[in-house]
Length: 586
Image 1 (cartoon, one colour):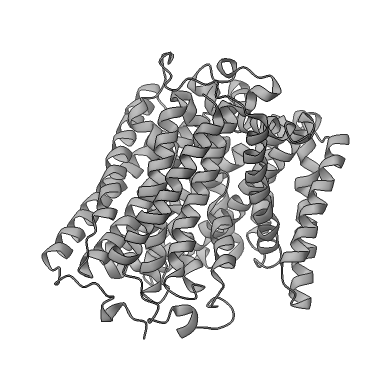
Image 2 (image 1 turned 45 degrees about the vertical axis):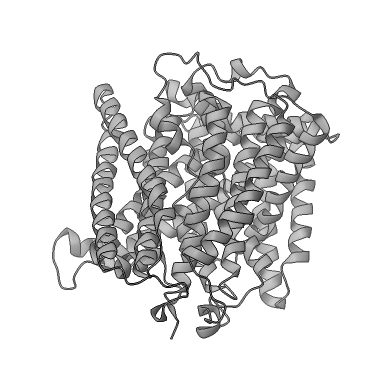
C-alpha cells in the first residue's frame, strides 16, 4: 500500500470532520455566541486572562497537548496491524477528541474559565471533584514514569542527542531572560533558539555522550542512571517560575513540532514509500494482549486524551478572544494531534524501510514492539529525512531530539502539576487534625517536601524492575503504557461526562458526548479487569494494586457520570438554540 494514499485519505476525512462535524458541534451542540464576552475580556488581568488571536492561541494549545504520547501509542499499536490503529486514530480524532477538546474549552469559558476539577464539582457534585483529583494524581504519576523511561531509552540509543538536549536548557533560559527583561515578542528569539538547537545536533554527532562507565561505577545500568538524573532535573525545573525555563522552551518546541510534521509529510511525498507492515497482524505470538480492548487504551493521545481537558480548561479558556474561536483552537488542535499520530503510524510502517530496517524484525512480539516503539519512530523519521537529502545519522539525531524535547516538556509540566494536585489534596484535609493526615497537610505546604513527593512515586515506578534483563528490555514498558492509557481515558471520560451534563442542562442533544463516553468507559474497564487478572497471576504486586485502585475509580466514575446525566435528562428544559442566560459571564 503506498503511504501517500493513506495520507491523502486521512487528510480528506479530517477535512470533512472540520467542515461538517465541527460546524454541527459549534452551532447545534455548543451554540457558540460571540455576543457573550469571554473571561479573557471580563476578567482580563494581563497575566492569565488575555484576549489572544486565535492563530496564536492555537499554537499554544497545540504545543501544550501534543507531547510524545501521540508518537508512542501509535508506534506500539501498529503491532496489531496498521489498519485498526489508523481507524481508531481517525475516528477517535474526528468523533471523540474533537468533541472532548472543543467542549472542554466551551464549558470552561461559559463558567468563568474554571478548570475541569472545579467544573466537576459544580456541574456534577463535590464527590466527583475528589474523584478527579485522585485520577489525575495517578495519571500524572504514570505520565512522569513512562516519559522518563522513554527519554532514558532514547539517550542510551542516541548518544548524539545528549548535547543538543542538555544545551537546550541554557538556550531556553537565555531566551526567557531576554523576553522577560525586554518585554519582546517570542517569535524571532525562539526561531534563533531553534536554529541554535539544530546547530548543536552537528556537535552532538561529533561528540556523542554515553554514561556506561559512570553507570557501572555507581552500580546502575545506563538507562537507570539517566532516569535518576532526569528526576533530579525535574525536581529543580518544577520549582522555578515557568517563565524561566518552561515557557521559553515551549516556544522553541512549538517550532520543532511543525518542523517534524513537515519532514514526515514532505519526505513521504518525495520518497513515495510503501507501507510494509501487515494491515491486520494475524501472526500474533502467544502472550500478546487482546486487540479488544487494549488498542483503545494503547492509543490515547492521538485519538482522545483526558490530559487535553486540563490544558483546555486550565490555560486555553482564559485566553479565548471570542466563543467562535473555540472551534478553531479546540477541534483543529485535535486534528493536529491526529496528524502527529498519523505521522507516527507512517514512520513505523513505511519510513523505517528507507533506512534498511525490516518490519518483522522490529516487531516480533508485543514486548519488543513496546520497548522499541520510540526507536522505530526515530528511525522512520530518519528515513523520511533521507529523502530530503539529510544523512540518516543526522536524521536519527534530529528525530531523537524532537521526541526527547516533547517528552521532557511534558515531564516538566507533569511534575509541576503533580505538585499542585498533592497540595490541593492536602488542603482538603480539615484544619486542626492529628496523625498522618495532619502531617501530610503540613508537608504539602512545604515546597521542598511536596516536590519530593511529586518526584518520588513516579521515580520508584520507573525504576521498580531496574537491573538485569529489565534494564536491557526497557522495563515492562507496555504495561506501564497501558495503565497510563486507561487512566488517561478515565480522565477523558470524566471530562466528557461534565460536558454532557452541561449540554443536557442547556436543553441540547448530548449524544455527541455520550457515545464516546460510553465507549471509553467500557473499553477502559475491560482493559483494567484483564490487566488485573494478568498482574495477579504473575505475582506483580506493584502494578496489581495500582490497577485495582484505578479500576475502583473507574466504577465510581461510571456511577457518578451516569447518575448525573440521567438526572440532567429528567430535569432537561425545553430545547434552546441560543445560549441560555446562565451561560453568560457576569
